[in-house]
Length: 469
Image 1 (cartoon, rainbow, N blue to C red):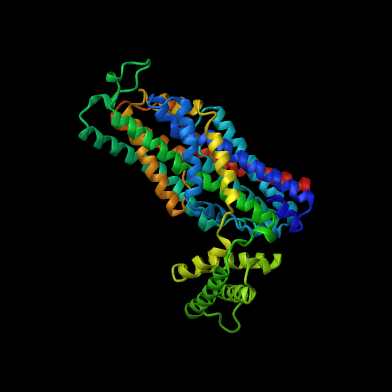
Image 2: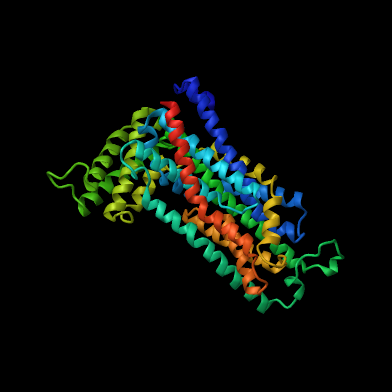
């Protein structure tokens, strides 16, 4: 991989910084693994359904699979949160400052909350860091607030806000249904503190359900949180090395031909619905979209492979797609050109296999360490009574479903908050009560994570930019 980059003209200094950035991104995913995945294994370990070392290896494998099989919809949502062109427009030093600021901020907050045993959200942390560097960058550029895709930020923020409420309500409802249907009262007891004969334990089906939901949450975590890491690395690669990664090098001649046809068709739609009238401002959305689509068509014309494109041409195609997306949102024709946008996406919406492998390994290995602090909080400190088999199964079943659906829709949600709120919901419906002190800490971490990571990342970006100047 790095030999290929060297052939493309990347000097050793930038190559070294790239390697450091990639290692830092993998470090974020490693911390994410032992921070968030503790939630996936908490119920299966706490209920003694699986021994800890078996549970964490099982969860690590499912996380690994989730990254590879979960698609890249969430990764694209992360990339689109912060316009990538800002990284390039600011120059190499500005790009490096942004990359390292958001990585260091995210890792510091994640590690600090893990150390305190608080199930805080890696999703909030990463997204807050991206928002922080975007705002700080726009301030330095004299266009305060323009460094963030606020439409995408609102979508992401809404999914992060609503998902815990869904987790609380659905887990409570799930437990009520289980209470009405299941007659075996052993299911509604907490696990024994000491090993007992098999007859005294819960039925095998509930143990099987706990194992299934543990695997499901782990897979969903890989497909959602793992894809955030994929998006983060693609942000690094496209921002620092646009000539190498702005366009998918594996795109076929058919993909290029499809993109040309899509650009022409989309141009017809824009011209019909929102024509760029004579004398109209060139920067108007309608004129920008049609100009960029014409440029994409002209740039790709006669090309049999991506290798025939220059670095500037690759970046112009990616920038053109971003500007067309923005114009489509503003003019309300996003759905009208959905098919054409998908064809254009074959050139720009991708992640190399080795990026998926890096994230999968980092997340999978991170899963196998550091789980105990969060497990104790989830099992014993959210409710006033210890977690029962039924509560654990209900909370994880809802978490698995919610996170899986969110991944399919391309919405980054918090594994931590969905599962923690689900457990709180089961405690509330059982009438066993909730430990106010722990819940206050979790809510405080939830409320503070986004603004704290924004401020931390923004401050680090300004500091790194000053050092690079």
